[in-house]
Image 1 (cartoon, rainbow, N blue to C red):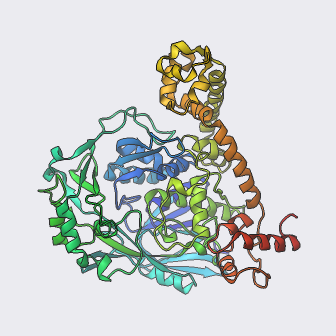
Image 2 (image 1 turned 60 degrees about the horizontal axis):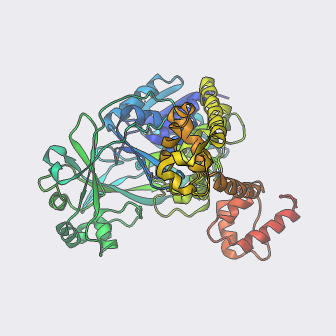
Image 3 (image 1 turned 45 degrees about the horizontal axis):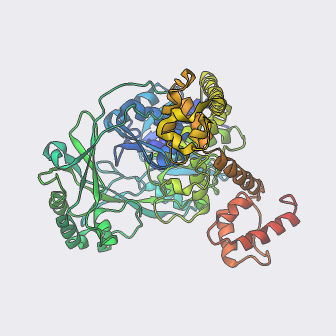
Length: 623
């Protein structure tokens, strides 16, 4: 047989494609990235930021698995902040504003230095399948590129169509052509193809904004970097600003709502509920007088501002007037109009938890083609698809994270068990075991996998082992160290009947934050003058030990259900007692375990009980 041109072809050079290619190359695979522009890898098409609530957990997990996103934002971020600090560590999240030009340049330089990756500037418009397995891709230039595996990371480029009022522009994003042939090729291969929508706000000239009327939002010191690998650079952080829409904004936008393609019927596909356009906000929340607009700088070398919260597809002339009704933007000049974009996706009931498609061996989907939205969601899928494509070529078992191990596992399981009718975004509320899936313990959960698959260097593993040891030492020390209640000041009022108390008990107090408790602890013993990370890790383990123990018991029960494997070829028809809807959903989604079957919409606990009995009778699951 002829040797393929590459082991793996990655279709698309966005956040998903980059992570897929890098991780596959690290696993000694020859990779080609087919993308329209080699200088625009991992381009931030929408907001110039990485992280946020639920999303930063994905970034930390990508980093723990050897991915690039965290390092890239640490190197090019212009402002870093932590969110949700008034709540528990389960929902603490980090967010960073990026210099979007430098971010892309950093990624391009990194990919160029990586051995085993070749970038081909072209557009894929077809996929060749032989004997049920992927064999090659075809490009618009007429090139046939053979490969053992293909990962499609097409973003919004699949039949992309931009809408600004009645204006329509065939594009994958503003200024770049869409890819049309690939959608048709996927249909010919038997894939279901749907349509989704997303949108972006206009960009503004920062020199035309009255910053005195806006509320500054400075970065956080010390800087909360994302990656364990990043050098801790020091720089002057660029402030973001907060402003608000006005009564005039509401009046003007509402009066012209009919001119938006979202309301005129020009767009029929579904957009994200959690990130509505400004016209949709005033329509859905008519009693709300104003909405927040976050003014986010796009980088150090530009005055361009991203008005987060003002996504719109209104006509250009209406946008120019409407933006000037926002406080502080009375003289603002638009440098690029906002727009909505429709694009094709493949409903993810067609993929396995490994992200390999069910109908074509060796063909993987990652990112927005699976119905997700967001750089972080795409990058996480790209990484997992890259690992699994490499494992597929080795004929090795796939790498699958479950819901108890990672937000990545939650996201992929959601995609494999839910009907995706709108762009999927990660939230902390989606993770039922979120207290165990925190930002601070991503490496605790995932480093062993990164080491197993050769995604991190051995010295990183040793360094982290040292951190874990130091954390455990500090837990023991905080439990052992007792101090006089009288020396605790106002914090001692919690212990009126005690003369002495351990620092661990002090940390456990519900109305005392971890930072407050650690500040007190440092005053009692020089051994607590540690770097912040191990001491904070120890304090979290102490403060939430009871809750973590309870959650661990829930996780063990969950894993027992996940261990009850259902063969892919299992026939659900003819099982007496199963509802028709349950049979349809089970046959469509083909759950890999009894636990996953129980998470399908339309499958009730009663259906699972019946299915369990039949599986046991057939010897599929243990009795």
